[in-house]
Amino acid sequence: MSEDSNLLLGVEESCAPLLEGDVVEVPLLLPGWQASILETVAHQRGLTAGAMVRHLVQDFLAGTPSRRGQAS
Image 1 (cartoon, rainbow, N blue to C red):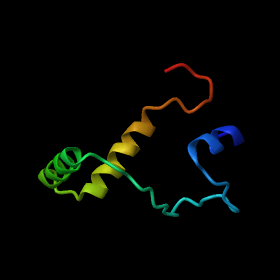
Image 2: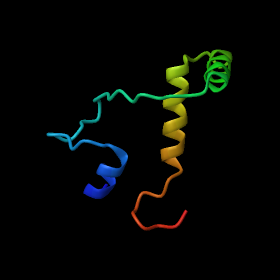
Image 3: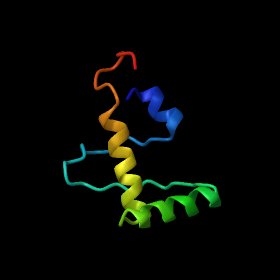
C-alpha cells in the first residue's frame, strides 16, 4: 500500500511487519439489521459473528488477485 493510500484510509505505518500469528483489532460499524443477520447466520453455522467475519475476509482475500495492477 502506498503512503498516499495509507493517509486516505487512515492507516498508520507500523514499526515492525506483522508476523503470521499476529492479531490486529479492526473496528467494524454495521447497521443494526446487518449485525443482527450476521449474528443469526453465524450461529446457524456454529460460529460467532467475529469468526464469521474472519471467514468472509479470508474468502474475499483468497479470491483477490495477488499482484498489483492485475484486473479482477
